[in-house]
Image (cartoon, rainbow, N blue to C red; front, side, top):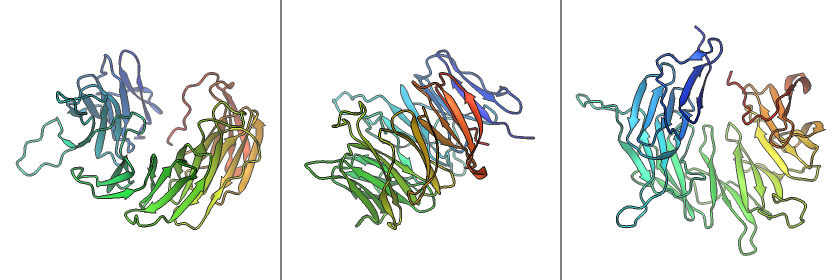
Length: 374
């Protein structure tokens, strides 16, 4: 039997799970929860689905709909899973205890407990670790793909933990002024960190091999960088950096200036990516083949270009009102679309047939656009 694709939806009154192609029916065995349900999510592996009510968090088997576990965590506003689905992470709104100290509102739980012989298994789980996490932005821990390590940023350092032992710091990367970081996917463990401009010094992105933190293997310094998006390719071998200023001092853009850089994880290559059309960078996306990435940039009508890992432009699509680029999971197709305040047109191109356009979809006012995983 073909395993169906599946999607979940959340409304003001409840949550539903639907098996899509080829059956298109509600998931048998799933009891729809109702009420004020703030969030829900799948594990990256697709085995589990979780949602939060004001009283608890429930985790179900996505294939059967049966409840696997409940977590006694109240007022959860954010949910996340580790890459292999072994851990679930919850974030509650920051609060203080009776003594006025901040409560540990970020908690990590095992989805399935390891029980010793003769030890009774219960449906409720215990906390693996917990931390004070005031900001909802970037609230979650970051894990390596194999779940060997996880990390979180605190003042002037990135702390690393063994995923099964969050009681003590395994190692730390000390970086003065660090405001953002990104662990690489892939087999090799690398971490990219960002330090914004300060006191006349340029901003910097540095890449380290974990846990060799004595010197960076790759780095790029630049001005006009108040904040960044750090985008690793799927293999973890190259990093694209989208740098942005809060204010465009030229007055050309309300949203600030944007620039693009690329660094290799081994230090063999780094470059500013030259864009041949003035205006903001609207979107940057890696292909799943890790060999190329797409950029939509410039004042409307925008330009959409596919670059290789050496920042060489491979192909540019026709100028159109576009602000989104997404590669299909197999890397063969790419969609270039205009959403938000644009008309919603979606162009689909076949990269294996000389970038030939195979379809245009009229999709007015969409709020979500994703490729099917198959």
